[in-house]
Amino acid sequence: MGTTMIMSVLFSAWTAILPAQEAASAARDANRLAEPQEKRFNDVQPPELVMDILGIRPGLVIGEVGAGHGRITVHLAARVGDKGKVYANDIDPAAVDYLKARCRRQGLANVETILSLPDDARFPQNTLDLVVMTWVYHHVDNPVPLLKSLLPSLKPWGFVALVEPKPAEHGLQEGRALTQESVGEEARAAGFSLDGVIEDRLQTDNVFILRPVVPEAPGSQAEVDNHGDRGGAPDGDEEEPLGLTYIANAGVLVASGGLKVLVDALFDKPNPEYRSPAPDVLEKIRKGAVPFDGVDLVLVTHNHPDHFDASLAVHYLESLPEPLLLAPADAVAEMRKAAADWTKIEARVIPLDIKVGEKEKRDLKQIPVTAFRTRHSGDQDSPMNLMYLFDLDGWRVLHEGDSTGKPDDFQRFGLGGAPVDLALVHFWFPLEPNCARFLQEVLKPGHIALKHLPIRLESDAPGKIDQVRGFYKDIFLLLPGMPDRVFPK
Image 1: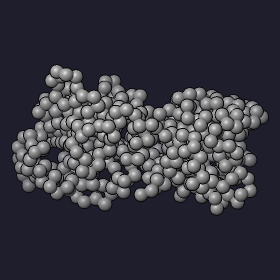
Image 2 (image 1 turned 30 degrees about the vertical axis):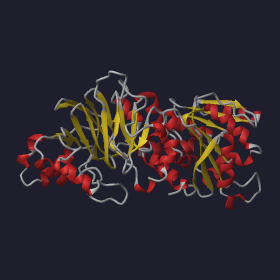
Image 3 (image 1 turned 180 degrees about the vertical axis):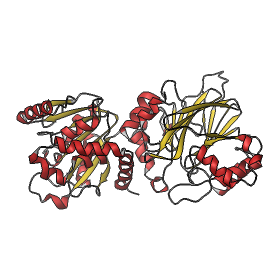
Image 4 (image 1 turned 90 degrees about the horizontal axis):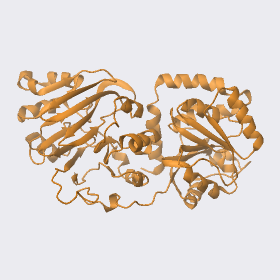
């Protein structure tokens, strides 16, 4: 799959988690904020759709280049809300004055206007989650210096979005026609890479996504051996390391100090989108063969066939008398139906029936576990999705299951209050501004394993993660055939 498609897929995923009530509210804001002369432009390039494509959410800090009279600015300000901010610039003093007055008139206190230069956006440093230009870039005569001026203003995960006419729609009446080749060349000259082009969401426009080129950081994954050692434990440190074995999709085995936890690994139904466990691996799991011998606890995040199969879970527990299994109540209900004699395993199955936003703590086989109920990806109540935070011989491990990826939900649970050693999260977390900020500023995990990667993205995803690798202590994709990783204390 090419760059264009992977970015389209990622941005579509972000759009999907916008709650319906937020979308309805946004539509009302759009009608309230637009000025009469803007209607024909908004019909062609709807501000709400542009923001949805870019994954703009409350709390983001955005820079807008060439804001003019604020056709897009006011919608950005309404979307990011009181916790966010918009820095809107223009090289025309009269436009800046008009925009200031408009924001005062419309009660938008989160907009700061800037009189900029053609080659200097004049945004504050290390402040912006993203920079937006709509129908601006093709008018810029000397774009490379302008793009260079944006680099210091972006946060580590920040990117630049250019919403510009498609060459076929341009007509060469004003400015210049923009192609993937021309924008890519200018981006590289300015220290960016053209990360993708979204071609199918807007009728007459393309959306070019630029990300800063990040130099390979010392100790990055290219320099890490198969054990994931970034310098090693101090001499004489006798604390047990943490081992990670990747199985398939979101399924892993985590082990330390003689304790083993199996997460989302009991499934065998082929799925055209995601990997399922290889037959030989599945046979080892079923028989409790190395490295799946001595499993203490099985965690099930949710009842979906690419994470869990009730019949397989029943047979696993019937074959191996030691493991306990912790799962959402709806998954356990399916196990009851699949079991020939439920009483044989019932005592070792712990169902959790908690509401969205609630959490529950258990101590199972010397493994403290906290389960957090979130909505399932796509903002669905069903199936029940549980995130798990568990302590394994002093290591804190987080597995987010298949959550919506909303950092506010995570923080309401108190995550970030203590260090997390290993976080297993969706593959797109470090590429989405809100989630990237949560990882870097709140959760701060020592190691990040990126899971749930569709098969069609396996060839392109490593290059995407390489672009942000330098901003994390250790980050890696869970890919088929990867060796086990061992993290020293």
